[in-house]
Image (cartoon, rainbow, N blue to C red; front, side, top):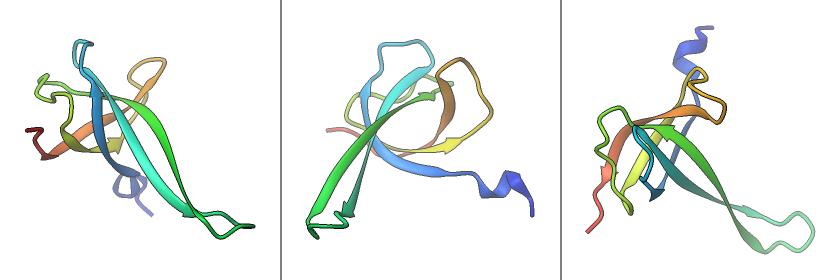
Length: 85
């Protein structure tokens, strides 16, 4: 199988754009707790590469897994799904 076509994708909200060519994206996921059956929300922050500095805080973006670009950055912004108001 071709590894390049099976890259992971996540959708989240930009929470910080203060870095040059980088944004922090908060990805939230929901799952059912195995014992109690309650739906639990978990979130994780990813640092993603934004080549053209076009993402702003509040934008909904899709990020794609890529090769390591720095110590903490191995995701890149694929597309801006929805602009912040």
